[in-house]
Image (cartoon, rainbow, N blue to C red; front, side, top):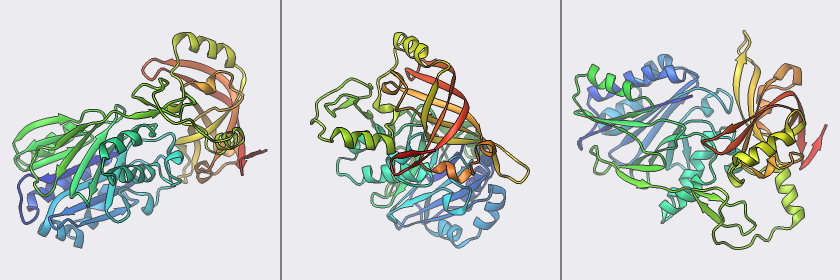
Length: 405
């Protein structure tokens, strides 16, 4: 879990007022309850320029460095908005370069709250949030950005709430899915936005700024705040993610997985297909939803049997007194030897002991295949998926598309 906070000046001014900056300092400090591994900011200026500052420290130690820095002084002179992030590390080492924001092509800076399960399928980056920033930036560069974003969202599997500054458009944009919150509060001083509405209203009230409205961002809706106009009313664009179809037509579905529409037939050979699946296993969005009947069949086929699965992501579960991870919750999916499971939407989960398996934490960022015994299978009604819990897990190393024991 990470946290997002920020402030947009409500009226067009020559820069931030000190009261605006103070509200942001307080939000960033309070928001460290959602993440204390790293802290970062994006400052947006009336010139269209932006600046960033980030470090792998908590907000308590970050704020004194940010306050009265050159970046903070620029915010006072020319600022129109500021975006902050408090990181709770999941994917990627806790070091300065892995802190948010992530900047793409020098014109796009983004923060992200959530965890993706297929980020390597998006971009080969150390941090899932970086891959998501690249994906969204490419979409926003398209003339028909709405369609491009719908295509991009169909490739994203996991939780996200994102805020970014797009220098080319001079806009601050926000978007989330059902798995992460994002809110904005319009008050006398401006627009406060962030992960937790009560934090925002508390900071506004604490600074004697009358609250006018509180809005929870709608799922899969792009909110665009024009920094040339400013003000507290964003443009809203509803997006309908276009998920890849599991059909051989190579078509798309429009929000419903497994119902093919039109599209050109795929021309990859069977051999190429096998190698691609070995190196880059398909994301669960590419699979059929699990009905109650298919769930019963799948559970009977795999319960208490051996199953191979690929690591898509992991969350640190426990650390020793030196700060090193000792166990990790790994999440993945299966593509071989899984009977009907590999054709259906599913999540594989297991808690592994890194020391027992002879793994270091940074080795979990690679392409790794595990094997274990199916300990339990549950039905996820919301996602129409099978949740497969594993025990007695061993690790296999993947090299050049071949499994090496």
